Image 1 (cartoon, one colour):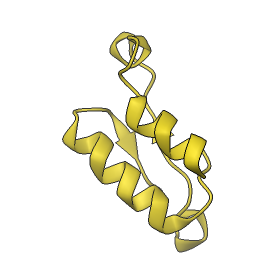
Image 2 (cartoon, helix red, strand yellow):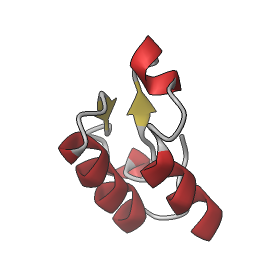
Image 3 (cartoon, helix red, strand yellow):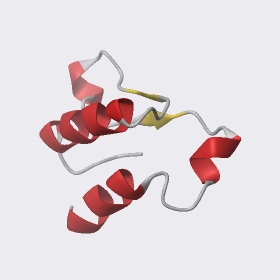
Image 4 (cartoon, helix red, strand yellow):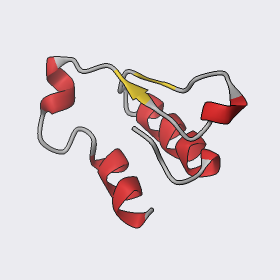
Length: 59
């Protein structure tokens, strides 16, 4: 997922990790606004990615 800013990506990344979501941010600063989600069955549960949904809606 591409977010509008690296700062927002860092905030969402931390929140998703705290919630137990498998998510990674590339180490390259040029890609700091990108999050990579691992699509496991649990990620598809309704509301599981609400944090990401809210960030995308506000961005």
